[in-house]
Image 1 (cartoon, each protein chain N blue to C red):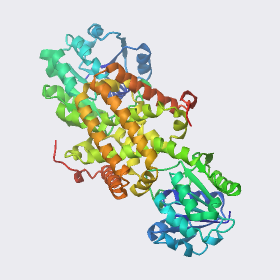
Image 2 (cartoon, each protein chain N blue to C red):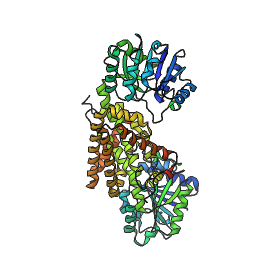
Image 3 (cartoon, chains in turn blue, cyan):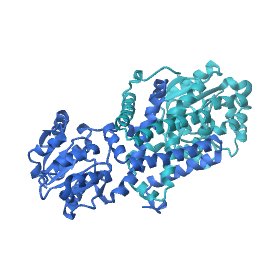
Length: 301
Length: 301
């Protein structure tokens, strides 16, 4: 790979650029963003070689150099993908792969199919499991992907393009896992998107109280860790929630039902059932932390 | 202070013993626990000088040396306090203060009043805001209380006893804050007890799924931090939930209502309202992290 374009130089885009340059020093990286200051921060960190401010994604096709890229990565909030892909569709060269880093996949692949038409085989859906609550190029980290998983959803793509993207992820230290887009969206609705919603809801609930100042004055490390993901970008997470709406609604409902079950046990002052509930959860988390995944149920997907 | 008894040498009891000994090298500490191995671990760490295994809290009164203590601290799950206090009531000397480290306060003060009778003035309710999800003497840390708050609820106690306990907390690096037991229980139901319930519920919900193995295989750092408090002791947290039941039920209901509000916005695909919800929460958390408490509402207690 000689030339890579990164569209959106936030936490993930800039981290990927930094890591790709480290593993391949001759690589030229074109950085594209709507915000000139953000681009300058990414350039100052040595992540990108050329900067293009693009206010409107329909202007992407006018960025010089894109047609000469070996790869283009979309590192934008997922609701901006349709516009970006529509604009890119005219400039994707015959050897160019397009991939993304979005947290939802069925919607992204549908958008790519609609926008790219015959070039849909160039598109490799990716989701690096390497988020942080901090965003922007200043939060970027060259080691962000080391030891992390990247889920690849590309039932549509040419094998050669999948290989190029897989090699890139491996070169920055990540482990590639293939999954169907539907399975991906169900799994991450449960283990990632739901906890984000739960954390946003807790912070918003307490901040709305008349005695919010007293509450936050006494919030400590448990609250800090529980709500860490509520510091995540609202724009990015609005898009994820909107684009994985169905799975996420199912998760919220299941969660509320489980919480109501805990509430019933507490309302009944059933100390034994309360202990068992907590003990099951604690034991499950310890199994997870110690890597004993084979002790979890594996009847479904 | 020359002699201190620590009843329950778990994380908090052992950490307090270690820190008290460091600030006052001549102090003799009597360690009491139901578990001989736990006691031996606390002794091996240098936290306690004498060990007493007490299977049944009614046997506390037989522990030699208790009547000669300047202070006795209850570091047990709060539902064991009535039995412990009833047994202690006969051995508390005229100069001896009894305090606790429990996470609920109205129930603890009521138990102390019922058990201690005329010696209720010896009891100082305390809650160090210094928990961790790890428990037992091996998790203890001599610096655990440094820079932390200790809430003191002692409307009943002699001022001299409150001073002794306050001085002890300050000597281990903590900041003492007075509060009514009722205000304490309301505040900590919201900022601590509720998040624990929410984390237990999420882990239990996902662990119960047919595809639990797949889910936990893809759970990452956001999930880990969100659920950290679900690794807390089920015995301790059952007791806290049972003893702060009323405030906690109110909190669970308010939380479910707020989560339903978020769900409605998502179900309606109202991208603007969804963004505003998340943005409010994110901004509130940032205000909190940066110490801008004066920007929170302060109309209530």
